[in-house]
Amino acid sequence: MYIFLLGYLLTVVRIPAVHINLSFLMHEKLYHEASVYMTFGKNKGAINKFSKILENAKNIEESSFITALIQRATCYYREKMCKEALVDLKKVIDLRYKIREK
Image 1 (cartoon, rainbow, N blue to C red):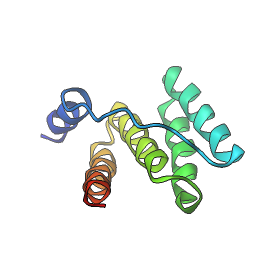
Image 2 (cartoon, rainbow, N blue to C red):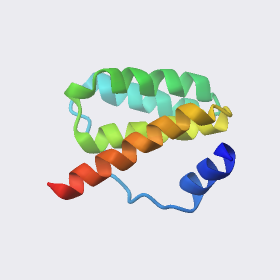
Image 3 (cartoon, one colour):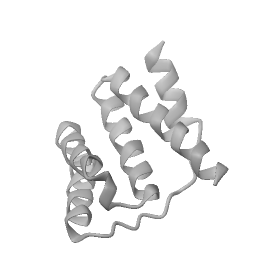
């Protein structure tokens, strides 16, 4: 059931493109490294990099935080870590509603 739900969320439901504006060079570097890991199918390495970005969430914009969550959820899904992916996607949904309420 989790796999079906995640597959639906990641492929059918299109989340609007989010402008990435990472304010510090460290986050830009981490994001680039995570993207390279994803490109070459090294999802666990990408999860590690996205997690480091999310640990320092106070230093990045909300849109970049959401993007990192979506990317990490994608990596979790590819690694069959469905529960972790669902946690990230639920956070994205909660944040999207909060942004719209503002």
